[in-house]
Image (cartoon, rainbow, N blue to C red):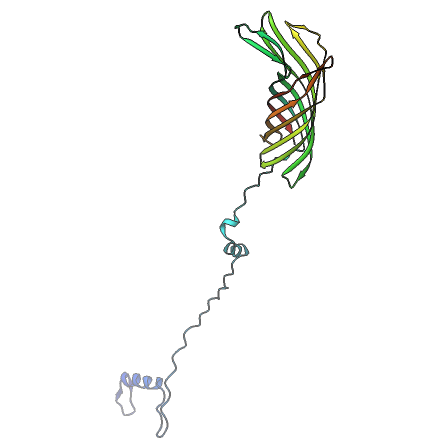
Length: 261
């Protein structure tokens, strides 16, 4: 509280009112427009850094465009069985030809030995240098083996032994990635024919002509190197015995295990 000039005391209230009046805007004079209201404070600017637009990666774009099924790795294509060269060990059984001897076995049954009868063991080779459209193969082959058969029993046994050579041409048909069908034909000649009775050679001078051999069969690949084959084979051939022809035709089955590429 302060003293007034007239000796009275001026209250603190008047001082506060004066202070408040000083904070207010001055009043407009007569004829003047009223002052404009104070503008509201502008909101604070958003100062966050703008985020760059998300661009899909090339792989994601490719995935979106490519069906899932086509993105899977395709299974490897099986390589067809198209041998260029192979060798084989062959086993076969054949019957036929003219009857040479009839003998009685140990059980009392009669058995007949023919000139074309025999169990065949042979080695063969085949070359197929030409393949057309990976379907049809053309080539040549050769084989060498022996054939033996016996009938009868103790005291009445007869047998015949011979060597044989063959030369053939063949046609191979690829019918499956692991299967071939083959047709081959060519020539055959026999050597060293010997007819024995009770293990003693008869000395009959058989002499072979050049004969014809034909074969039809199938071959299956076990892996990249090994395969097996089976076939039906027919041979038409004659022997001469002192200028007398003797038929030695035969028909039978052959089985072979082969190796090659």
